[in-house]
Image (cartoon, rainbow, N blue to C red; front, side, top):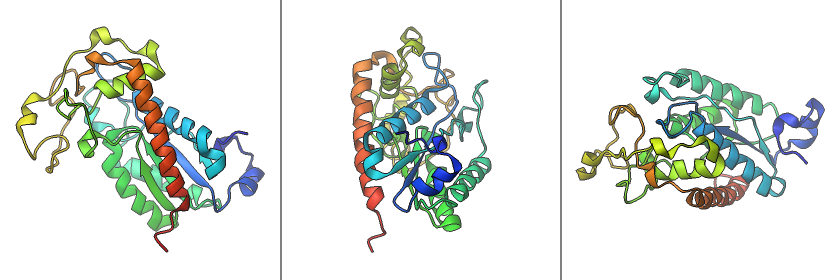
Length: 256
């Protein structure tokens, strides 16, 4: 049985979407990832992880998968021709409209599954805005928490493999090996920032940046050792972690 929301007929929405249902919206991006990766990386990863999660626990937890929102806030890559992006105001408006539409069903929970680190701050704000506007219980999950927002990266990348680096490239090699060209990859780690305790990716002080602030190639990390087997392990770990999170989301009631 399909767990894709848009496979339902109109009458089936009233029958199948209930107060126990959780609606899952994958969010990705269409943006440059350097010369070794295509622009589809973030939305492919978001959609594949979301689909795997819904396949694994959708029946048990009453999950329903929305079509992937493939274009989002990518203006840190606006310098690169081909990057397609929405302004913060536009993306917020889109998310609010989607929330309002979901709220016309009996579903009470909406999960944003985000594959693009540049969305993170805005999506956290959107959780409260959608809840205020619609009453939905709203949640944000990531296949992996972006290193720029406290997530982990490899020691060799000095904790700063945030875009097109080892892990992301490895996951994409697992999912779409024919679209990766490691012969065009090089180390692009902002080594000087590693000396900083606070002003660095993952440090206590946030800073505004564009992806070509560090190198004209526009990716940040070291993908040269990327490996599809590593990518498989990371992908499967992300799916398992989000499945666990979805079980808590399905039961979440603000502690009442």
